[in-house]
Length: 123
Image 1 (spheres, rainbow, N blue to C red):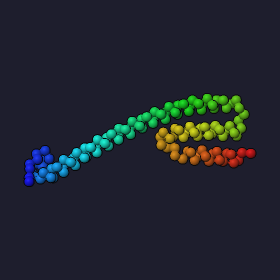
Image 2: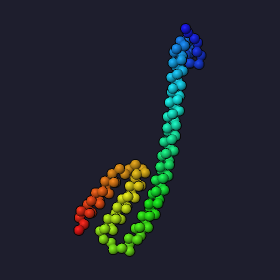
Image 3: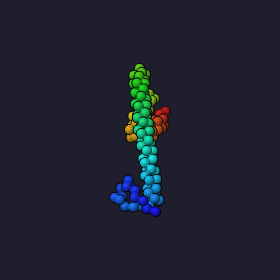
Image 4: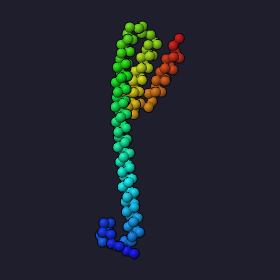
């Protein structure tokens, strides 16, 4: 059985009812898939914004705490231990800052090497 489905953009060509049903079903599935992909993209954008704002708040908090702590260091004797502590804190801050940008994948290993190296040469 043939039918003229004018909304299929076939310029008046006749197609079978089965072909038309298959076409409509595939069109609906593509629209549903497009809607789902748009929802995923919107959710991802919202989560990235929340994570960015959370990282900024954590970085601001850490900077304030770190600055306050480093100010107290000037009243202590500047020995290797305090140099190690301040170095570790600065590297932790770098990890927070570069983690937000996705640039600091190897800073954690740098921190571990610093701690291991400093502790192995200290008496």
